[in-house]
Image 1: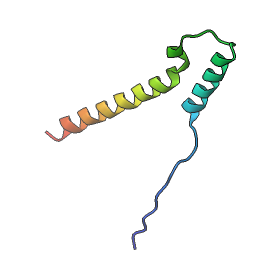
Image 2: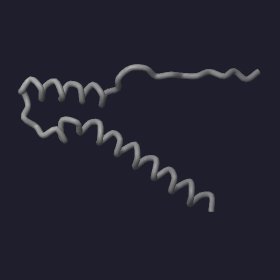
Image 3: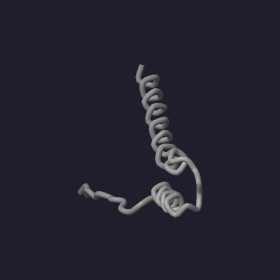
Image 4: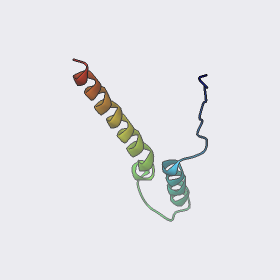
Length: 65
């Protein structure tokens, strides 16, 4: 008998917590970084995810030819 189980991951990950910490430090005046660098954990993780998706898609395309 096949059992369907769904796994849900809840909560904030490392990048989310790091971004929140950087935002708090920026708003409190502890760091004087540009907002681009304060939000860097978010866009870097999105970029890495996008790169992985592209690489997997290319490999899938090449292997199915």
